[in-house]
Amino acid sequence: MEKEKQEVLIEDIVAYLYLYLPIIIFLLTWIRPVFAYPVCGILLFCGISVFGHRRTVAITIDKRKNLLWLFLFSTLMLWWCVMSGQGALVTQAGDWSKHNALLSDLINLDWPVRYFYEGKQGTLVYYVGAYLLPALFGKIGGIKVAEVCLFIWCWIGLILVGIKCWRYVDGENGWKLVAVGFGMILFSTFISQMAKLYGLFLPNDLGDGVHWLSKNIRIQYSSNIIQLRWVFPQSIPAWLVSIMIMEKRKEIKSWGLICVPLILYSTFAFLGIVFIVLQLLILECIKEEMKIKLI
Image 1: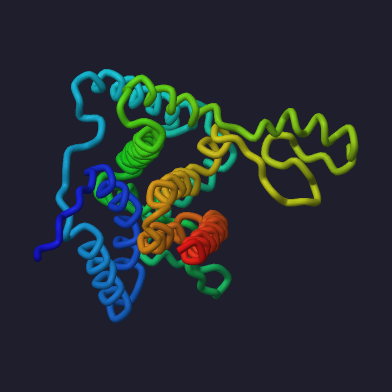
Image 2 (image 1 turned 180 degrees about the horizontal axis):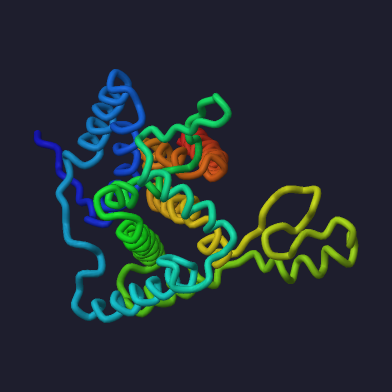
């Protein structure tokens, strides 16, 4: 008997492509073919295994009544990108000196990027995932083209995160997509308020109240606004992976394929997601054991 095909939404495919396209580029341009080709083959096999037996359907928000809300949400995310420094239309945060330097080197130097200093050679080792596709276009059209591509790439990422969050909480009423957009922007740990309380007890250990709560406990409590303005290459993929794990919480076999690409975007975020996934796995095992006992 033929297995019934399951449905998969187009935004799911786009989300995987968003995460894995830079991975493929990295493998084919930075890694030796003897290693890169087999890994690409494995990734292709995994993709076929996940989507090959399924039937694609239209994007969730294709209903005409929701198109206006999609436009408003996309415009909101565009404004957020601009205010976060994308395209250099506003004053950029301090980390942009690093982002701009990395993008420039990825455009002007051969891959893998190598540096030579005082007779020594070193290779660029950093979270380069978000820069690779814009840098490829930059090799053709220059730094300005790369900046525009980076802007669009980040914008697409935010739209994907918002649509998937909206689908997770509702997926029907378009106005809630705009509400999700404002939620994404305003989501915060309220570190400034926490810093005031923390300073009452340990004033000598108080951090800057923006990134760090404590000078000695090096754990960041940054808001989404700060993250997108300072560390967007790490933040957007981490947000996307997080909501994908929430969506696929019952599909344990998908967790690895969702989490693995995050290594190229942020090792810290990858380790954090792995910790959460392990907790979810333990909870699922406990639930299954309780079900067996009840049976």
